[in-house]
Length: 207
Image (tube, rainbow, N blue to C red; front, top):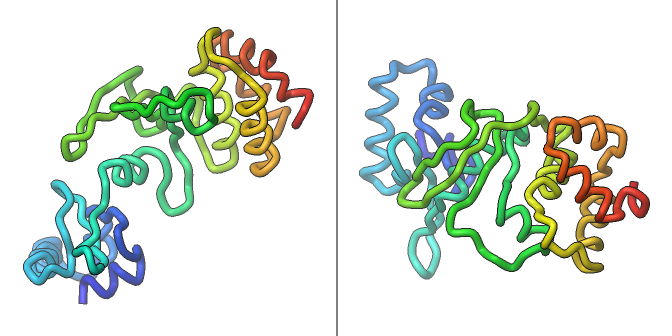
């Protein structure tokens, strides 16, 4: 019963927290819900990823699928149920826009759900760096914040060539980035962010 309900709500290979399960089955006692979880684990219908985090695996010819620490981190600190409250930062963000080809060993995340300037966490052996957001990140300003985070992460040595500019312009147009909102939010970021934004030339090209 529990796995069928969770599969309908979350699908396969999606992190599911114990608190979400308890909430879904709120008509039962907490102790009974955890007994249901244990039965689902014993039968293999539900898999334990880490303490308090589960998922429903999909059976393939190569065996059962698994979720990753990145999926768990994204759900906890970036987006859940279509609502944004965080963005990627550092090398991962620079990589997404083609500024660098470096793949980060440690992924940085800026999120509303962190209260400190910088904190390291580990999820199943994978290290992440969490940073407090400069202003509240919402689904309404996510794309503007993400773009400002990109320019904030850039150094003067980072080239903004035609390839990078094209990717940024495409991101701006596809996500309807609002120029007025972008410039208003820029006051929360360091001076180099605005300098890099101006240096990129995208203000004149896309917005």
